[in-house]
Image (cartoon, rainbow, N blue to C red; front, top):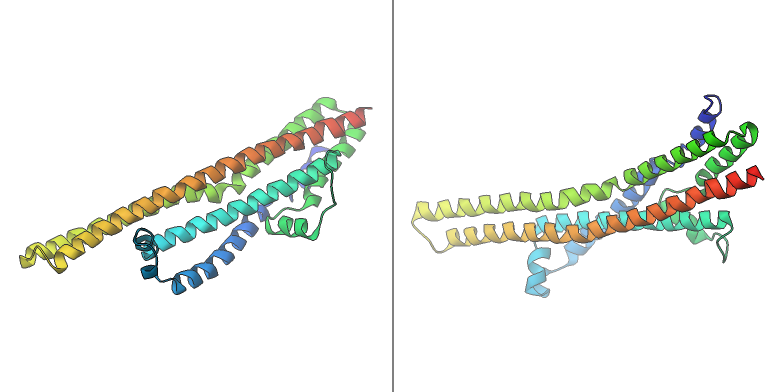
Length: 258
């Protein structure tokens, strides 16, 4: 592969592999979650809820974990919509799509998910022009493989906040366990010190144990749908990469060879 030809092509990939695809949907998810969290839990009265649900929603620490969970869900939803929009655009580029052209809704989806169709179109166009000048078939295939590899790495990078949530939710639950057990031990020490097994000391022990088990339970339960979300996104991203690779090789390479 010639050094003079490859850099301009890879330079056009800068927008395709942009940090914008991470920061923008993450900021949008946080901006939606924070006011919703403050409004919902300020107006919500746990006493009117079923006891099994109220004990978790009335726990401020569990509320924090739920907020992290919903932020992750919103971020994953924006990433999924971005992948769908990119897949639709690539299929239309290949001539496989049908139906109406891009609408304002598609434009908003692309904006909120950090995607730009100009970025996706720039790399194939640059590869086509480069191959038309050099006719270096082997270099073209290697460069296409490289672009596909970088796309896969970018998908992994885009999903990093979801992977962080999978790690942090159980960790927050275990931290809550430590806090709750510490409170329980403090209540037990108070009971022993005052020779009162019943009353406030016993209530503190039971309250600390309840806090410990509740936070652990919430953290472990919330991580399950987040893991399913990550699996779904990875599957969709792999399908998208296959479409992109088909676009690079079948449409560009074969048409130029003819």
